[in-house]
Length: 553
Image (cartoon, rainbow, N blue to C red; front, side, top):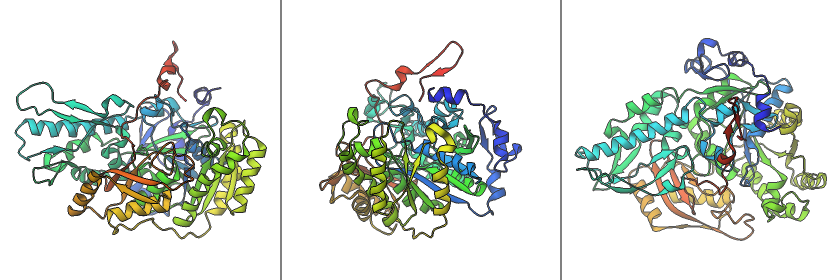
């Protein structure tokens, strides 16, 4: 059966019953049908004095284009923890329509390890991402209306972009304001995908609605003729934007196919944004259960680094265990094997590609000082010989491994890793950040690129240097950095999979996100509006005469 058929054939519990498992009353839910609900902000007030449970962060090796199953692994672990009698909960990101209709597919797990209702979650869900899109574009409309109506703020350069939650490369560069009306000022502009919007980052990093409103007000929307910033609050935009986000800021409650509670909230990409679900969701989950399993996007050089250096710093939390997900195909992919040969047994490719896994584990254990376990997401076609070879190589370096078969067996395939996580979570850690906020911007960039990526040096294009200088002169140099780069490599070149030779990182631009509270560093040729593949998943998605959706995976 396909993932969607497995999900559809599984009987779900009413969401009110799922809420009871973590002591949430029906009165504290806003129901979206039988199986989805938003959680009232009053819940956190009721539990804020409780001790936090253990936090389990799931990250991964550098991925292949189809991903390595971090969400499937996160769900498997949470179900596995419940299987061995532990009170667990999930805190995950919301899927973007871009990948759903593109190449990567949805983000609700797979096989027997899924969150449900999967079609709803992967599509419009409770409308959060649509609300973020509307809020983002309301700000754009207010900016252009202000310019049209006389421009009393003296806006000379607009840096705020419109967004849409789809992969649409045609929108990477557009001309706007071509109606010819008096006072309309045409300009060359561009769109971001919604998950790269600063509004998305603000939603995920805000502590509550008032904090969200403050952060929205602090968004830099443009500059005047003296090159001084103009903020969203100068347009009196923060109130109306907060109104559009009043429901979106509330976390969403769903369940796994095995009825483990799951909070899904916020959905920034990790290659072009900070890649973590909301602080509100994670901190609430930590109060509701003894073990919270959460996920950071793409490889550990991206999602985990940003989770640790941005989110943990902002939320004053840290993971008790980090799970680094690997697959045999990803290891071989980073060992130089072409995609059409990736299922063939190849010990030499594993020998080459395992260095990618070693580097991620070393970063997490040695650079961040955390407890780490490698989870091998087992596929049915994986060779026993290759698995045993990997096991021995990890053992030589004293790296803990668990073979996980959650996709095929659900919680029964994750008992071993659940037991190992419980034990590992009791070990002391020496958690530390990669850089200090007091470091200047270039020092922060160079610490991440050298220590986490392994780059020899950083090459700055002239525009990036000018923007770094401007950001520091404006007094924002003490913000954390969010590096946007390819997810397929430690380098900024998606084709440099093995990274077996010295490489540099090229910083093309640096952007201030004063509302979100970080600085975006654009490395290599990364773009904030993805495109569709030659044969997008959208071609195979349909709805039959019974109203059942097919083709989402």
